[in-house]
Length: 83
Image: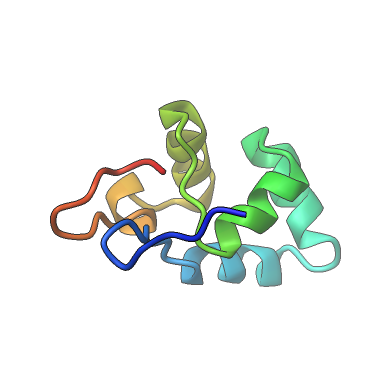
């Protein structure tokens, strides 16, 4: 298992994801998966702080959530956008 150092830790703004899932109750996570074309297990990882390397996935998720990609995946100073 790879452990990220504090300098490598990425950020995910989980609030828009959680709000979308809550508003899509029941089965909000599955509905978000269908709407964004991102597998449920990948969405679960994103909610835990994993930033997708694929820019299409980041963009598609942001579009479905109705937020800017930079709001959903804010970059930390001195770090890359993707993990």
